[in-house]
Image 1 (cartoon, helix red, strand yellow):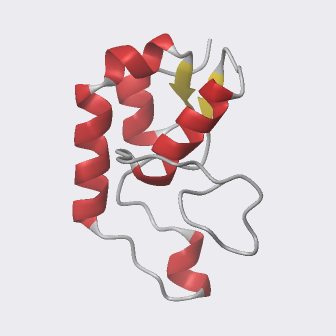
Image 2 (image 1 turned 45 degrees about the horizontal axis):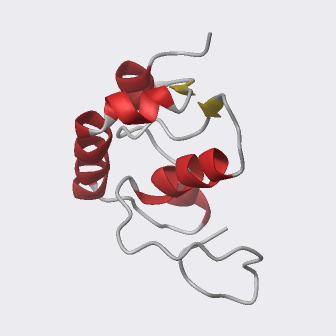
Length: 99
């Protein structure tokens, strides 16, 4: 699933605006596929190190996290109504932990 075409993408989501980065896309895709409970794992949206930091030297910018968290916080009621919860980090503080 992606918002951009690639030879590795099997489902293209035509969205004019996507807040929340890849986590936002995951939530939208799950909701459209009919899932009633969506548990976010591996996306704490905080400054803890990522595998990409070590494997390929890719750093995630603090600003990107801030932008995504602002989107989540401003839309948390609607997102929580989709059955979204998170296992850890700042997303767990916004949406709550699983049932």
